[in-house]
Length: 166
Image (cartoon, rainbow, N blue to C red; front, side, top):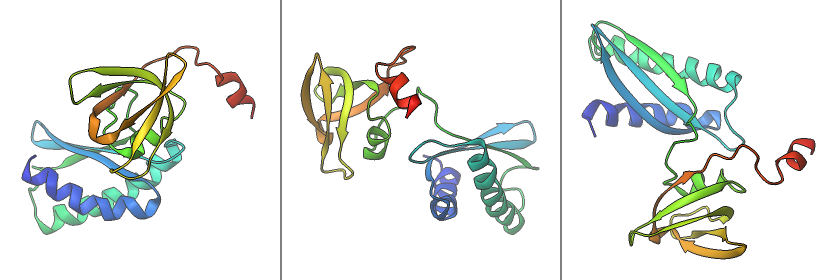
């Protein structure tokens, strides 16, 4: 992890947290004489465009203050991009699993195996685990046994119509 990325994670975590969002990632990429600062935020229930606009203002103020205190930290200037994580984002933290209850996922296990199923339950803390419905039966997986997970794209998720009507 680069020193600048670590500094930005430390700087922006306290800025994003009070808004009710989680800071998922920060990357800085050179783009000619300037830099592109990409910030990924998430929250329970998903991130709306209004959320992105509100969080962007707070992040921009913090980055502008850093750029003023340390001119050139981003090159000649920077462009800020704030977004939510895409469906291809790996599930690595308990909150990622919790936010994907009901979704079909593939869990890569530390022993090299995989488990594919629908997330039924997900504990809040790192010492807990999750329960997947695999072939119609629940399968408990402690987080310690799960390396990461990925959401499987479904064009017609079972029960989605009932959820939309509620």
